[in-house]
Image (cartoon, rainbow, N blue to C red):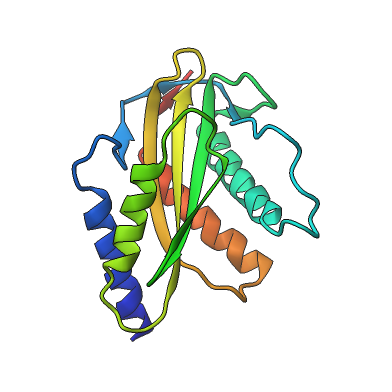
Length: 185
């Protein structure tokens, strides 16, 4: 039964996220020419771990993206990479959706993306409570700021997951999102 709910949730989120809009949920501009990448600079230092429990999850996301791109010959640098990696995390349930924008950057409106995520979660039509998370990743040309690739993956959110299981789930989502990325130096 749980697997059926999860599949329903994933199918609905894919259907709703692919709907036409001025802010596309998926972008693929073809082959990306890059040797290096860096993450969006977050700005002020993160809160201490005792205040903000999200940083360990961000670290897992960073590690998963770095591992995936390294497998394509693209190395992580601290700043000024050929491409900039930005990402959003949406956490939602039957009633509400929260966007975590810590590594998405500034000057880009996320309202439509958050509305799409909420519609997908709200549209699951299951009367049972559930939580889900969606990871959206953008690959941006660091010189022109052109969006080269955007993709997302949705997974059930499990609160009491071990760190190893959480890292594995995140790696699977990142690998799904970036599976079609074609990179040349």
